[in-house]
Amino acid sequence: MIRKATPADLPAIMEIINEAKVTLKASGIDQWQKGYPNEAVILQDINGGYSYVYLREGVPGATFAFFYGEDPTYKVITEGQWLTDNPYSVIHRITIKDAFRGQGVLGEIVEWAADESRKKGYASMRID
Image (cartoon, rainbow, N blue to C red; front, side, top):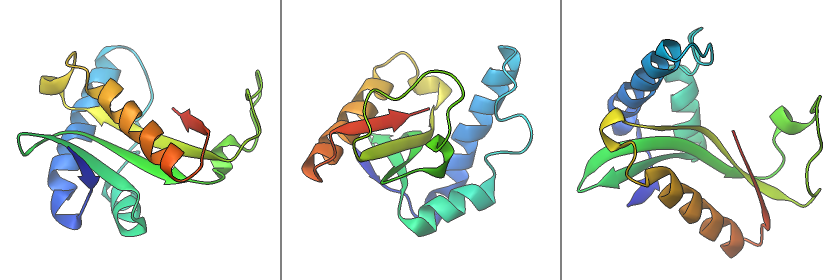
């Protein structure tokens, strides 16, 4: 099940994010190693209505931000080009709890986001 996050979800979301930070660091990846994302960023996502949690049997197993429309992050790309200039939806800050990895959670989230995008008439989706 996927639902919008609430402020009560913040501790579980931060636990998932902090696990990801440890995993990234252990893999030699410097992403998320300088304090981002932090509680303020996640609360901004929650308050904006675009923070989501993935639940399995009531247990939070993943978190991500999902929204529609132009994302300033994608205004300029230095290598390559977008396949289309169509209006798009965006998935950001997606991470899966260690105990849920390798169980198809990412695929479920992307499928859900694609379905939600199509319902609102968006034919393109960007994710990082």
